[in-house]
Length: 382
View 1 (cartoon, helix red, strand yellow):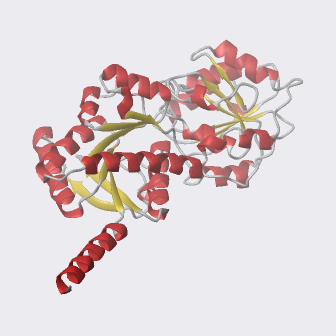
View 2 (cartoon, rainbow, N blue to C red):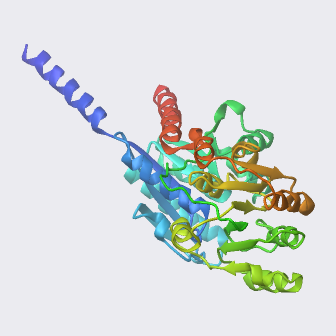
Protein backbone atom coordinates (compact mmCIF):
# COMPACT_ATOMS: atom_id res chain seq x y z
CA UNK A 1 0.00 0.00 0.00
CA UNK A 2 2.80 2.43 0.94
CA UNK A 3 4.58 1.55 -2.30
CA UNK A 4 1.46 2.39 -4.37
CA UNK A 5 0.87 5.58 -2.41
CA UNK A 6 4.48 6.60 -2.96
CA UNK A 7 4.23 5.85 -6.70
CA UNK A 8 1.03 7.90 -6.96
CA UNK A 9 2.75 10.75 -5.14
CA UNK A 10 5.70 10.62 -7.52
CA UNK A 11 3.40 10.61 -10.56
CA UNK A 12 1.48 13.56 -9.16
CA UNK A 13 4.68 15.51 -8.52
CA UNK A 14 5.87 14.84 -12.07
CA UNK A 15 2.51 15.88 -13.51
CA UNK A 16 2.50 19.05 -11.42
CA UNK A 17 6.00 19.85 -12.63
CA UNK A 18 4.97 19.31 -16.26
CA UNK A 19 1.95 21.56 -15.77
CA UNK A 20 4.00 24.31 -14.15
CA UNK A 21 6.85 24.41 -16.66
CA UNK A 22 6.16 26.91 -19.38
CA UNK A 23 7.10 26.56 -23.01
CA UNK A 24 10.36 28.41 -23.44
CA UNK A 25 10.89 30.31 -26.67
CA UNK A 26 14.14 31.99 -27.65
CA UNK A 27 14.54 34.42 -30.54
CA UNK A 28 18.06 34.52 -31.99
CA UNK A 29 19.04 37.65 -33.86
CA UNK A 30 21.96 39.81 -34.85
CA UNK A 31 22.15 43.13 -33.04
CA UNK A 32 19.79 45.39 -35.00
CA UNK A 33 19.89 49.14 -35.56
CA UNK A 34 16.85 49.63 -33.33
CA UNK A 35 14.73 51.89 -35.51
CA UNK A 36 12.75 49.61 -37.80
CA UNK A 37 9.57 47.60 -38.03
CA UNK A 38 11.50 44.36 -37.49
CA UNK A 39 12.64 45.57 -34.08
CA UNK A 40 9.13 46.72 -33.18
CA UNK A 41 7.45 43.45 -34.09
CA UNK A 42 10.14 41.41 -32.31
CA UNK A 43 9.59 43.42 -29.14
CA UNK A 44 5.82 43.10 -29.52
CA UNK A 45 5.99 39.32 -30.01
CA UNK A 46 8.17 38.76 -26.94
CA UNK A 47 5.86 40.92 -24.82
CA UNK A 48 2.80 39.02 -26.08
CA UNK A 49 4.42 35.62 -25.50
CA UNK A 50 5.37 36.56 -21.94
CA UNK A 51 1.78 37.64 -21.34
CA UNK A 52 0.58 34.12 -22.15
CA UNK A 53 0.02 31.86 -19.13
CA UNK A 54 2.09 28.96 -20.46
CA UNK A 55 4.99 30.59 -22.31
CA UNK A 56 8.08 32.61 -21.59
CA UNK A 57 10.29 34.21 -24.23
CA UNK A 58 13.40 36.29 -24.69
CA UNK A 59 16.32 37.17 -26.93
CA UNK A 60 19.72 35.69 -27.62
CA UNK A 61 21.62 38.48 -29.35
CA UNK A 62 24.61 37.86 -31.60
CA UNK A 63 26.60 41.07 -31.24
CA UNK A 64 29.48 41.26 -33.75
CA UNK A 65 29.93 45.00 -33.35
CA UNK A 66 26.98 46.14 -35.49
CA UNK A 67 25.89 49.76 -35.09
CA UNK A 68 22.82 50.14 -32.89
CA UNK A 69 21.05 53.47 -32.47
CA UNK A 70 18.58 52.26 -29.83
CA UNK A 71 18.18 49.26 -27.55
CA UNK A 72 14.61 50.15 -26.56
CA UNK A 73 13.27 47.37 -28.79
CA UNK A 74 14.88 44.72 -26.57
CA UNK A 75 12.35 45.67 -23.86
CA UNK A 76 14.49 44.14 -21.08
CA UNK A 77 14.02 40.77 -22.80
CA UNK A 78 17.66 39.81 -23.41
CA UNK A 79 18.29 36.34 -21.98
CA UNK A 80 21.89 36.29 -23.21
CA UNK A 81 24.15 38.28 -25.52
CA UNK A 82 27.32 37.05 -27.17
CA UNK A 83 29.68 39.95 -27.88
CA UNK A 84 32.63 39.25 -30.15
CA UNK A 85 34.20 41.79 -32.51
CA UNK A 86 37.14 39.81 -33.88
CA UNK A 87 37.91 40.50 -37.54
CA UNK A 88 38.13 36.82 -38.47
CA UNK A 89 34.51 35.93 -39.25
CA UNK A 90 34.96 32.18 -38.95
CA UNK A 91 36.50 32.39 -35.48
CA UNK A 92 33.96 35.02 -34.44
CA UNK A 93 31.02 32.89 -35.54
CA UNK A 94 32.52 29.83 -33.83
CA UNK A 95 32.73 31.74 -30.55
CA UNK A 96 29.11 32.90 -30.90
CA UNK A 97 28.03 29.32 -31.65
CA UNK A 98 29.82 27.83 -28.64
CA UNK A 99 28.37 30.46 -26.34
CA UNK A 100 24.90 29.82 -27.74
CA UNK A 101 25.29 26.05 -27.23
CA UNK A 102 26.19 26.63 -23.57
CA UNK A 103 23.18 28.91 -23.19
CA UNK A 104 20.84 26.33 -24.77
CA UNK A 105 22.11 23.61 -22.44
CA UNK A 106 21.49 25.86 -19.47
CA UNK A 107 18.15 27.44 -20.46
CA UNK A 108 16.64 24.36 -22.19
CA UNK A 109 14.19 26.10 -24.56
CA UNK A 110 11.49 24.22 -26.43
CA UNK A 111 11.60 26.43 -29.51
CA UNK A 112 14.15 28.72 -31.12
CA UNK A 113 13.26 31.28 -33.79
CA UNK A 114 16.03 32.77 -35.93
CA UNK A 115 15.61 36.05 -37.76
CA UNK A 116 18.25 35.72 -40.47
CA UNK A 117 20.26 33.26 -42.54
CA UNK A 118 23.64 33.18 -40.75
CA UNK A 119 22.00 33.01 -37.29
CA UNK A 120 19.94 30.07 -38.58
CA UNK A 121 23.08 28.13 -39.50
CA UNK A 122 24.78 29.03 -36.22
CA UNK A 123 21.73 28.06 -34.20
CA UNK A 124 21.47 24.66 -35.89
CA UNK A 125 25.10 23.99 -34.99
CA UNK A 126 24.55 25.24 -31.43
CA UNK A 127 21.51 22.97 -30.98
CA UNK A 128 23.56 19.99 -32.19
CA UNK A 129 26.35 20.82 -29.75
CA UNK A 130 23.88 21.33 -26.89
CA UNK A 131 22.42 17.83 -27.41
CA UNK A 132 18.96 19.21 -26.62
CA UNK A 133 15.73 18.34 -28.42
CA UNK A 134 14.82 21.83 -29.61
CA UNK A 135 12.58 22.83 -32.53
CA UNK A 136 14.29 25.38 -34.78
CA UNK A 137 12.14 27.74 -36.85
CA UNK A 138 13.14 30.54 -39.18
CA UNK A 139 11.25 33.84 -38.98
CA UNK A 140 12.38 36.02 -41.88
CA UNK A 141 11.21 39.62 -42.12
CA UNK A 142 12.43 40.24 -45.65
CA UNK A 143 12.06 38.11 -48.79
CA UNK A 144 14.65 35.32 -48.36
CA UNK A 145 15.59 34.94 -52.01
CA UNK A 146 17.80 38.05 -51.96
CA UNK A 147 19.33 37.45 -48.52
CA UNK A 148 22.92 36.28 -48.05
CA UNK A 149 23.10 32.50 -48.52
CA UNK A 150 19.36 31.87 -48.18
CA UNK A 151 19.83 28.08 -48.31
CA UNK A 152 21.04 28.30 -44.70
CA UNK A 153 17.36 28.69 -43.79
CA UNK A 154 16.82 25.07 -44.79
CA UNK A 155 18.74 24.06 -41.65
CA UNK A 156 15.57 24.93 -39.72
CA UNK A 157 12.95 22.29 -38.91
CA UNK A 158 10.13 24.71 -39.59
CA UNK A 159 9.47 28.20 -40.94
CA UNK A 160 7.20 31.08 -39.91
CA UNK A 161 6.43 33.16 -43.01
CA UNK A 162 5.08 36.67 -42.57
CA UNK A 163 3.49 36.67 -46.03
CA UNK A 164 2.37 34.19 -48.66
CA UNK A 165 5.05 35.48 -51.02
CA UNK A 166 7.74 34.70 -48.46
CA UNK A 167 6.28 31.21 -48.08
CA UNK A 168 6.46 30.77 -51.83
CA UNK A 169 10.13 31.81 -51.85
CA UNK A 170 10.94 29.39 -49.00
CA UNK A 171 9.30 26.54 -50.91
CA UNK A 172 11.25 27.51 -54.04
CA UNK A 173 14.44 27.34 -51.95
CA UNK A 174 13.59 23.76 -50.99
CA UNK A 175 11.45 23.92 -47.85
CA UNK A 176 8.44 21.60 -47.67
CA UNK A 177 5.18 23.55 -47.92
CA UNK A 178 3.88 21.60 -44.91
CA UNK A 179 6.77 22.99 -42.84
CA UNK A 180 5.89 26.62 -43.54
CA UNK A 181 3.15 28.45 -41.59
CA UNK A 182 2.03 31.89 -42.75
CA UNK A 183 1.39 33.99 -39.65
CA UNK A 184 1.77 37.59 -40.95
CA UNK A 185 2.65 40.23 -38.33
CA UNK A 186 0.56 41.37 -35.36
CA UNK A 187 -0.87 44.80 -34.69
CA UNK A 188 -2.39 46.06 -31.46
CA UNK A 189 -5.93 47.39 -31.48
CA UNK A 190 -5.95 51.15 -31.23
CA UNK A 191 -8.64 53.53 -30.06
CA UNK A 192 -6.96 56.49 -31.76
CA UNK A 193 -8.44 57.91 -34.95
CA UNK A 194 -6.22 60.27 -36.93
CA UNK A 195 -8.41 62.76 -38.71
CA UNK A 196 -8.15 64.07 -42.25
CA UNK A 197 -7.31 67.71 -42.99
CA UNK A 198 -9.00 69.83 -45.61
CA UNK A 199 -5.65 70.41 -47.29
CA UNK A 200 -4.12 67.31 -48.90
CA UNK A 201 -1.42 66.03 -46.51
CA UNK A 202 0.68 62.93 -47.19
CA UNK A 203 2.67 61.04 -44.55
CA UNK A 204 5.81 58.94 -44.85
CA UNK A 205 7.29 57.05 -41.89
CA UNK A 206 10.43 54.96 -42.25
CA UNK A 207 14.10 54.88 -43.17
CA UNK A 208 15.31 57.54 -45.58
CA UNK A 209 16.48 55.70 -48.69
CA UNK A 210 16.72 57.65 -51.94
CA UNK A 211 16.55 54.37 -53.87
CA UNK A 212 17.48 51.03 -52.30
CA UNK A 213 14.64 49.49 -50.25
CA UNK A 214 12.40 52.49 -49.57
CA UNK A 215 12.77 54.17 -53.01
CA UNK A 216 11.73 57.67 -51.89
CA UNK A 217 12.83 59.04 -55.25
CA UNK A 218 9.59 57.65 -56.71
CA UNK A 219 7.52 59.51 -54.12
CA UNK A 220 9.26 62.81 -54.87
CA UNK A 221 8.94 62.32 -58.63
CA UNK A 222 5.22 61.57 -58.27
CA UNK A 223 4.59 64.58 -56.03
CA UNK A 224 6.34 66.87 -58.51
CA UNK A 225 3.70 65.88 -61.10
CA UNK A 226 0.67 66.84 -58.97
CA UNK A 227 -1.48 69.80 -60.01
CA UNK A 228 -3.35 70.09 -56.70
CA UNK A 229 -2.08 71.68 -53.45
CA UNK A 230 -0.36 69.21 -51.14
CA UNK A 231 2.08 68.77 -48.26
CA UNK A 232 4.35 65.87 -47.28
CA UNK A 233 5.30 65.08 -43.67
CA UNK A 234 8.39 62.85 -43.40
CA UNK A 235 9.25 61.02 -40.17
CA UNK A 236 12.50 59.09 -40.26
CA UNK A 237 16.23 59.29 -40.71
CA UNK A 238 18.94 57.60 -42.72
CA UNK A 239 22.17 58.05 -44.59
CA UNK A 240 20.35 59.31 -47.71
CA UNK A 241 18.69 62.25 -45.93
CA UNK A 242 20.94 64.94 -47.42
CA UNK A 243 20.63 63.36 -50.89
CA UNK A 244 16.82 63.39 -50.64
CA UNK A 245 16.74 66.98 -49.42
CA UNK A 246 18.99 68.08 -52.26
CA UNK A 247 16.83 66.22 -54.80
CA UNK A 248 13.53 67.81 -53.71
CA UNK A 249 15.25 71.20 -53.94
CA UNK A 250 16.21 70.38 -57.52
CA UNK A 251 12.57 69.47 -58.22
CA UNK A 252 11.41 72.74 -56.65
CA UNK A 253 9.11 71.09 -54.10
CA UNK A 254 11.21 71.58 -50.96
CA UNK A 255 8.84 74.17 -49.44
CA UNK A 256 6.01 71.61 -49.35
CA UNK A 257 7.97 69.01 -47.37
CA UNK A 258 8.61 68.97 -43.62
CA UNK A 259 11.40 66.72 -42.31
CA UNK A 260 10.64 65.68 -38.74
CA UNK A 261 13.60 63.35 -38.22
CA UNK A 262 13.48 60.02 -36.43
CA UNK A 263 10.95 59.78 -33.61
CA UNK A 264 11.06 57.05 -30.95
CA UNK A 265 7.25 56.95 -30.83
CA UNK A 266 6.32 57.96 -34.35
CA UNK A 267 2.54 57.63 -34.08
CA UNK A 268 2.34 59.56 -30.81
CA UNK A 269 4.33 62.26 -32.60
CA UNK A 270 1.88 62.24 -35.53
CA UNK A 271 -1.06 62.69 -33.15
CA UNK A 272 0.54 65.47 -31.11
CA UNK A 273 2.47 67.38 -33.78
CA UNK A 274 1.07 66.66 -37.25
CA UNK A 275 -2.46 65.93 -35.98
CA UNK A 276 -4.17 65.11 -39.30
CA UNK A 277 -3.15 63.32 -42.52
CA UNK A 278 -4.91 62.38 -45.73
CA UNK A 279 -3.02 59.14 -46.30
CA UNK A 280 0.23 57.30 -45.66
CA UNK A 281 2.40 56.59 -48.72
CA UNK A 282 4.92 53.74 -49.05
CA UNK A 283 7.06 53.47 -52.21
CA UNK A 284 9.26 50.48 -51.31
CA UNK A 285 11.10 48.24 -53.76
CA UNK A 286 10.62 45.33 -51.38
CA UNK A 287 9.33 44.60 -47.89
CA UNK A 288 8.79 41.60 -45.64
CA UNK A 289 5.37 42.41 -44.26
CA UNK A 290 5.16 46.18 -43.77
CA UNK A 291 3.96 46.82 -40.23
CA UNK A 292 3.70 50.53 -40.97
CA UNK A 293 0.63 49.87 -43.15
CA UNK A 294 -1.11 48.00 -40.34
CA UNK A 295 -0.12 50.66 -37.81
CA UNK A 296 -1.64 53.34 -40.03
CA UNK A 297 -4.84 51.40 -40.71
CA UNK A 298 -5.31 50.63 -37.01
CA UNK A 299 -5.64 54.42 -36.60
CA UNK A 300 -8.04 54.74 -39.53
CA UNK A 301 -5.43 56.09 -41.97
CA UNK A 302 -5.85 55.32 -45.68
CA UNK A 303 -2.69 53.88 -47.31
CA UNK A 304 -1.19 54.04 -50.79
CA UNK A 305 1.61 51.56 -51.47
CA UNK A 306 3.72 50.07 -54.22
CA UNK A 307 2.67 46.52 -55.06
CA UNK A 308 6.09 45.24 -54.05
CA UNK A 309 7.22 41.86 -52.72
CA UNK A 310 6.06 41.18 -50.14
CA UNK A 311 3.02 42.05 -48.06
CA UNK A 312 1.17 45.13 -49.36
CA UNK A 313 -1.14 43.11 -51.61
CA UNK A 314 -2.07 40.94 -48.62
CA UNK A 315 -2.96 43.99 -46.50
CA UNK A 316 -4.46 46.56 -48.85
CA UNK A 317 -8.02 46.06 -50.08
CA UNK A 318 -8.43 48.44 -52.98
CA UNK A 319 -10.78 51.29 -52.13
CA UNK A 320 -11.53 49.86 -48.68
CA UNK A 321 -8.37 50.73 -46.78
CA UNK A 322 -6.00 51.92 -49.50
CA UNK A 323 -4.71 51.54 -53.04
CA UNK A 324 -1.82 49.77 -54.76
CA UNK A 325 0.20 50.99 -57.72
CA UNK A 326 2.80 49.09 -59.81
CA UNK A 327 6.29 49.39 -58.34
CA UNK A 328 8.32 52.23 -59.96
CA UNK A 329 5.26 53.53 -61.88
CA UNK A 330 5.43 57.16 -60.71
CA UNK A 331 2.74 58.24 -63.16
CA UNK A 332 0.28 55.74 -61.63
CA UNK A 333 1.23 56.92 -58.14
CA UNK A 334 0.79 60.55 -59.17
CA UNK A 335 -2.64 59.79 -60.62
CA UNK A 336 -3.79 58.19 -57.35
CA UNK A 337 -2.50 61.07 -55.23
CA UNK A 338 -3.81 63.70 -57.64
CA UNK A 339 -7.32 62.21 -57.50
CA UNK A 340 -7.39 62.78 -53.74
CA UNK A 341 -7.34 66.51 -54.33
CA UNK A 342 -10.55 66.41 -56.37
CA UNK A 343 -13.84 64.67 -55.49
CA UNK A 344 -12.25 61.62 -53.87
CA UNK A 345 -14.27 60.04 -51.06
CA UNK A 346 -12.17 58.41 -48.37
CA UNK A 347 -13.63 55.35 -46.60
CA UNK A 348 -14.88 55.82 -43.07
CA UNK A 349 -12.14 55.52 -40.43
CA UNK A 350 -13.88 52.59 -38.74
CA UNK A 351 -14.15 50.72 -42.03
CA UNK A 352 -10.38 51.01 -42.43
CA UNK A 353 -9.83 49.83 -38.85
CA UNK A 354 -12.13 46.84 -39.29
CA UNK A 355 -10.49 45.80 -42.55
CA UNK A 356 -7.42 44.47 -40.69
CA UNK A 357 -9.29 42.52 -37.99
CA UNK A 358 -7.42 39.32 -38.83
CA UNK A 359 -4.08 40.97 -38.03
CA UNK A 360 -4.99 42.20 -34.56
CA UNK A 361 -2.83 40.75 -31.82
CA UNK A 362 -5.40 38.48 -30.17
CA UNK A 363 -6.11 36.65 -33.45
CA UNK A 364 -2.42 36.52 -34.32
CA UNK A 365 -1.46 35.03 -30.93
CA UNK A 366 -4.16 32.34 -31.14
CA UNK A 367 -2.82 31.23 -34.52
CA UNK A 368 0.80 31.40 -33.35
CA UNK A 369 0.19 29.38 -30.18
CA UNK A 370 -1.68 26.74 -32.17
CA UNK A 371 1.45 26.31 -34.29
CA UNK A 372 3.78 26.20 -31.27
CA UNK A 373 1.58 23.58 -29.60
CA UNK A 374 1.54 21.49 -32.77
CA UNK A 375 5.32 21.65 -33.02
CA UNK A 376 5.63 20.69 -29.35
CA UNK A 377 3.46 17.61 -29.91
CA UNK A 378 5.64 16.53 -32.82
CA UNK A 379 8.78 17.06 -30.74
CA UNK A 380 7.48 15.02 -27.83
CA UNK A 381 6.43 12.20 -30.16
CA UNK A 382 10.00 11.85 -31.47
